[in-house]
Image 1 (spheres, rainbow, N blue to C red):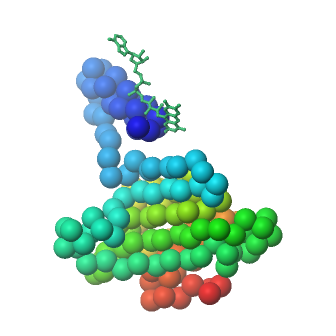
Image 2: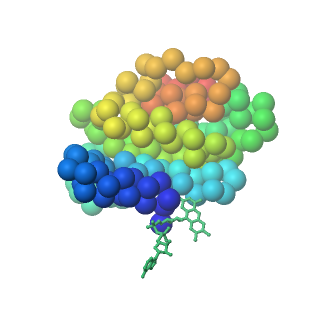
Length: 149
Ligand SMILES: Cc1cc2nc3c(=O)[nH]c(=O)nc-3n(C[C@H](O)[C@H](O)[C@H](O)COP(=O)(O)OP(=O)(O)OC[C@H]3O[C@@H](n4cnc5c(N)ncnc54)[C@H](O)[C@@H]3O)c2cc1C
């Protein structure tokens, strides 16, 4: 029930008919709920990883601690990054946040290239933006070292 998934599948079929090499990774189709704040997620949930016996770490950052959110008085929500306990590869990102529908794309790109939480934590994010909360959650997922909580 997602337009962007249907679009990818349409292109997949067209490319298949044209003898090309189509690609869809269903694990990386972002889910979005257009409430306010928006809700967005990609990859695995904690519950799914527990059921698969995958050891994982979790880093969370509350939106109320974010400068950009405070400036806009839009402080509800959080960003959660789940990464593999041994490799640190990002396995899932879940957020309730202003602009989550757009913010989730940083997570999708990172996961497409199999980034670690540390990779995201080391990327310079512009200030003041909502995207800083993604970096903060990545810092929380790696040795619990967010800058603003
Ligand atoms: C009100 C509403 C709001 C939505 N909002 C969002 C949103 O904000 N974001 C999002 O990601 N997704 C949203 N969705 C979901 C999204 O629209 C669908 O997931 C997506 O359109 C599915 O695409 P599809 O090509 O699989 O099917 P469809 O878009 O339903 O296309 C199927 C087509 O097949 C045709 N058809 C059916 N039977 C036959 C037949 N026997 N012969 C010939 N043609 C036939 C239909 O007429 C239709 O044109 C929304 C859906 C609804 C209903």
